[in-house]
Amino acid sequence: MPIGTSIVSGVLRSPLHRMMSRSLLLLKYQGRRTGKEYTIPVGYARHGEEIIVIARRADTKSWWTNLRGPQQVEVYLGRSWKKGVARAVEGEDAAERMRRYLEAQPRMAKMLRAERDPDGKVALAEARRVVQGNAVVVVELDSGVQKGVSA
Image (cartoon, rainbow, N blue to C red; front, side):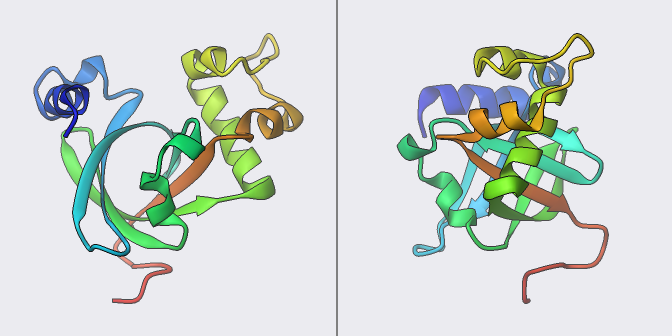
């Protein structure tokens, strides 16, 4: 595990987590081919019971490809592990999720050079532009009933 990942993971699991937990969480998933379990820190935005995760410069990362179809995952959020189902989304679905993410994370909007109106809103056309080259993963947190994944 890279040292930066280890440090961020340690902080997110510690009492100091509030420094980072508004924009970062730990995502635990299994590799599709190997079955190996991975835990990585990722940026996120929450929208109700849905968590939106962005893999920036997706062509340089492979973790999100394990989530192309629905897969059970766990997220470490608010000092506890929560179960959910993750899936990568594309097209208009990805653009809409990117819009929500950019509105919830103003610093990332600035970093990705997304234009926002004075109210902090991002036009869907702008989200379509920003989503190019990035991957969007949606995690639906469990509400007690599994959706989209067979046991």
